[in-house]
Length: 59
Image (tube, rainbow, N blue to C red; front, side):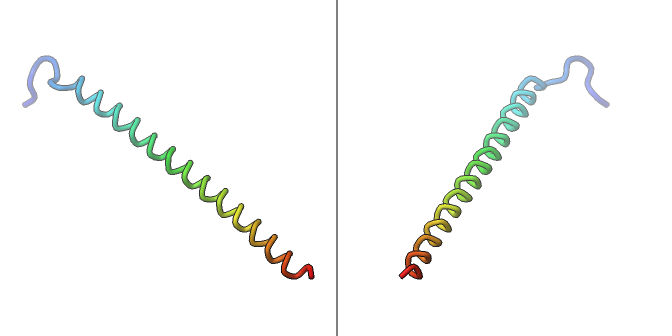
């Protein structure tokens, strides 16, 4: 049987849930930013490779 009256510890559970959601969203945002940063680095390196190859065959 359940207890009568106000549910115990609901305020702390709500705060915990809110904090966990914030943490998860922050981590996912960081992962997205990291992924974009890596993509930009890869694009930059590919452009540099193409320039080096073009310089080699331009002679």
